Amino acid sequence: MILELIKNFLSPKQACKHEHVGVNCDFGYCPDCGALIENQWYIVKCSCCGLKHKAIVKNGKIVPVNNFCHNCGSEDYTVERLETIDFININYAALIRKETKVSQPQKPLAQCWVDATRKIDEQPLLLPIYR
Image 1 (cartoon, rainbow, N blue to C red):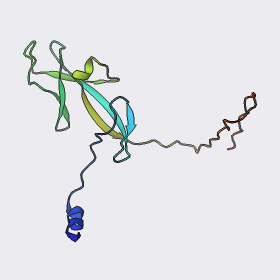
Image 2: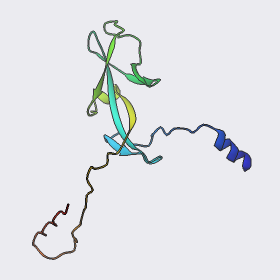
Image 3: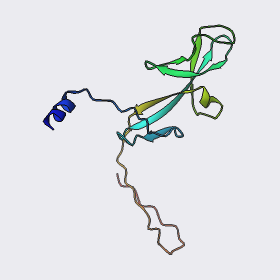
Image 4: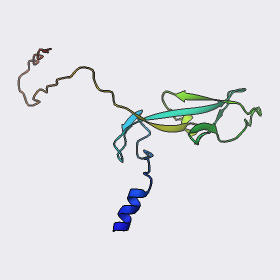
């Protein structure tokens, strides 16, 4: 028991890899650590002929799986970020999950809710904002 506590204390902390964040949304919260995660999709194309290549993440860098283009033989490539992923590019794209900071609003906000069980057909009046 004591040895396990000492081992846990002295061992380096493992960073969360956010593997359980869904890939179908741009932003999501990691269920393991609670951080806000942005899914960023990247694709690799040949600089010479523009052919798409399968991309992987190696040592934090996005690189093609093969060292050269099978179409033209070039070793140069470009990395492009995709705004949204589609079913054509998903076979070629690499995913990077990046932690983002939640921006706090500049001014304090007040919110109110209307009771959903009201039977009146009138629209409720908005409350005034006091500054």
